[in-house]
Image 1 (tube, rainbow, N blue to C red):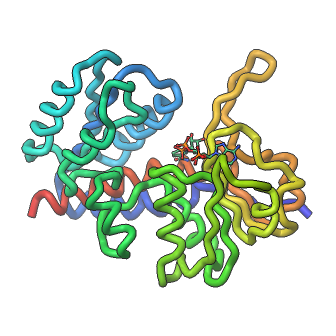
Image 2 (cartoon, helix red, strand yellow; image 1 turned 30 degrees about the vertical axis):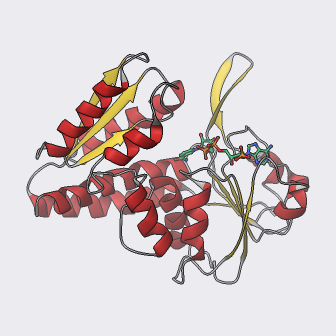
Length: 287
Ligand code: NAP
């Protein structure tokens, strides 16, 4: 039997519908400022989508580009200015930064109320404690897909491959919460995990956030598992470039019960949730 596709488009559509209603009520366009340092082809796709969707849903998106060798102090000054600028609802910093820019320092000076990425230590703290703050959009997108397709998490063995601060760690905390998309039994694996397949094979729900194209193979999964593929990897095959996930989609398709496609899965929802956070930031900052 083939897997049921957990398409992101329908999920994102419902989120955009809610955004449209809220913006209509506001009567004003929220504004997102994206700060980009250097060139990063992987994030270009995401940023272009934010600009396109922002225009469609009445959210102004301004892109501020800096060369890769920009001085750190220039970025710190810029963020201080954006924090004080009442016309700016949300600030997003495209990562990774060049090596000479201190990620922690920059992330922690963004106003937590404009931190639409949810990476500020205060927002991460709230997430861990189960309090209401900005939640990083990719982990939130995973919850949205589970909610939309009514996938039960309570008591399930959920294995996350990847422990990054932006995906794996926040996601593990969200899935542990005592709520309708939580109560899972969570295992986090990473590059030092011994016998990775022994863990992935036990997963009722397997979440891949690794950054390696087609890494999870059919012989690493349990029959009828649910696969959420967070990975977005640009590969070249026969001189054609394309995006693939961290899961060997074709190979796992007949064994899994449900699977998110790449592209068209989690990434699609992530964009809508970032814009949803901008609307929320507008409301908080105009109080
Ligand atoms: P990251 O910071 O590079 O983290 C990758 C994680 O995978 C690390 O914890 C790493 O382990 C682990 N890993 C690497 N090789 C492994 C192996 N052979 N076996 C087991 N674990 C291994 O990446 P990220 O930022 O979390 O992103 C992960 C993927 O999600 C990427 O493809 C990225 O493009 C994609 N992504 C998608 C979205 C979206 O909206 N859909 C958003 C963000 C990222 P160590 O910690 O031991 O190094």
